[in-house]
Length: 143
Image 1 (cartoon, rainbow, N blue to C red):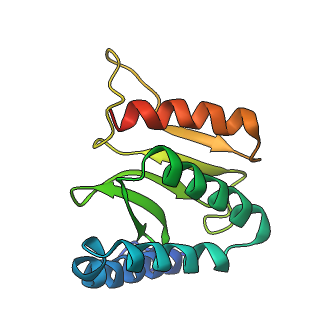
Image 2: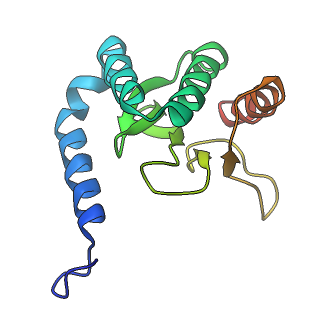
C-alpha cells in the first residue's frame, strides 16, 4: 500500500532502490561485458522457474542475434544496451505479480513503422515459434 506522504508503494520504493544501485554500478558494467552478463545471469538464476526458462531463452536469442548489445540489468531484470541505452529487456511475471512475462523494446530500438508499432510482447512459453517471432523483431530493432 502506498504511503500517504509520498505516494509510492513499498514495492515501488524497493524497485527504485534497486535501480539506484544499478546506476551506481553502471559505469563499471558498461565497459565490461563479462561483468554485465554475470550480473544478468545472477538475476535470472534468482527467478522462479517459469520466468527463468523464458529469460534464459531470451538471453540465448539476444546473444545469438544481437551479440553487439551489452548485457546488463535494468530494474533488476535482464536488459541489452547499445551505447549505454537499453534496446530490449525481459520483465518476469513473478516480480510484478503479472499474468505473463514481457519482452520489451525501448526507443533506442529501430522499430518505427508509421505512427503505431508494437514495443512490448507478452510471453508465457519459450518455443521455436516464439523464438522465431522475437528474432525477427530483434533483428529489426538492431538494424
